[in-house]
Amino acid sequence: MVQEVFTDLQQNIQADRIRQPKSYLMRSVVNRSLNALKSPRLSRELYTGPWLPEPVFDPLPETHLDRLLREEQISYAFMVLLERLTPDERTVFVLRESFAMEYEEIAEILGKSAVACRKLLSRARNKIKTDRDAAPTPADEKTVAKWTGEFLKAAKTGEFGPLLHLIREDAVLISDGGGKVRAAINPILSKERVIAFWQGIQAKGSLQGELVPTRINGEIGLVHYRDGHVIHVILFEGDAHGRILRFYLISNPDKIFRAPSV
Picture: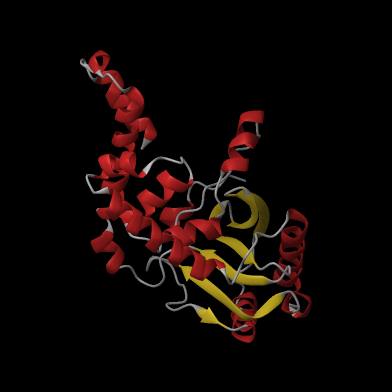
């Protein structure tokens, strides 16, 4: 969205007449983003199975600027939370929480009253807080490395016992195939069912190939390759006690084709 706005600005013969460039650019990006969020709503409603956001793969090799950007990058789990907000709620939340904009500025951008924007932010915070209570803090890299290591062993040997001890009783696995590849139509609930799912697809050979630890959304996940093609992206979300709360399995080829090549 930012790139498109700057491209249009360069082609705008009246660009030098813009008196407040920051406000102009902010409004342009917000409007484009809102249009993008609202335009796929009909197709989203017809989407086959759970819908997960597209993962963002960190650049390789990583430069100093990339590291700074990664530190500011939101986690995949938080991206999932943002998807539960309406476009207007998400806009107000990001502008207020990330950019510390005043309600009057946000109201002007959205064409709403400041009171309405306060209500939108309150609803957004309540939705996010409700879901975040189950996972108060993100896991550190050492913990995530342990998860990925045990998953790699299980995928290779079929022995999921050690991984079982790292998963919460109320764990959830969400699989997004978009109707283009086979995937679970509904979220898989409970530790036992999640492990049964992984054991089942491992026994069928669906995890054959190469599982490569990869930095995604500033965190470590796994990219599954077979014959040079990306098959799955697997991400983990944990709780404050170092246990896995959610598995995200993204298989829709439209969402994972940007994965690094092997």
